[in-house]
Length: 346
Image 1 (cartoon, rainbow, N blue to C red):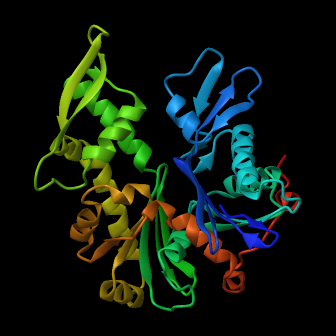
Image 2: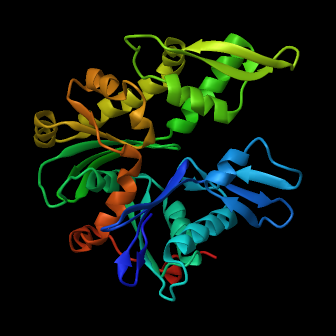
């Protein structure tokens, strides 16, 4: 999502796994996990971001840690509003001017999800909000010129959803949202460790395994790491060794669904745009694009050159702030700033 202040603009990508805020000419100013720790009785947040993230699984009595965004959609209005307000206030400090906001949103978000998102951001302190689809933001952030007529295929693999789109002339020609992404990879690793190694591990450990040895295609040199958890049988502490090839095989069914969805996108795309894409390259963005071999996986499935853009997890936020300066183009495609009265929620 993106926010604009008096005198300067903000770009905000509010995702399932992280919230990223960028400021034109300053770059990324906030990059934190989108987690909150809150008092169970009052539902008032105590911590947000990295501190809440590391508290998960270690909560004291009366405190709970949650992700208020699930699969790219708001699952808890109050907690999301408090979290967004916390980070907006951290950026604008004590400014009396309420910012405008351009917010990234999953490509196939429903009208209710969009209205709720606008209401949350306005309640958190924004003056008005314009929603721009995440793959379009990611394309802008990856350096795609919005006035360029050629087609570009963007695949944004986040924490809750994977958004795919063919972008041309500052808009999307084809789009698809697949609700398989980083969080599903973590859950699948937890399930695999339980079924194969009879060990129960936490979500943090699953993430560490994914980042350290996770791969979309088998590595040339297999790597291994140890994982600590609790035995399924006796409940006692347990340590096992897991290899990168095991994790690759474990994630294969989910990754196959993603590549299949990308192939289906081509079947719906016009021949001229397919020609544009074929003469160029497919862009991979989002945090999970950095997993080893993700570009090779899609390259083999699509028969095209695939490139992971630099700092793929920051692309949507950067693109959101770029969109603010391109509203004269986006306005032609129906993108408008809205306030709470326009959405009539809460």
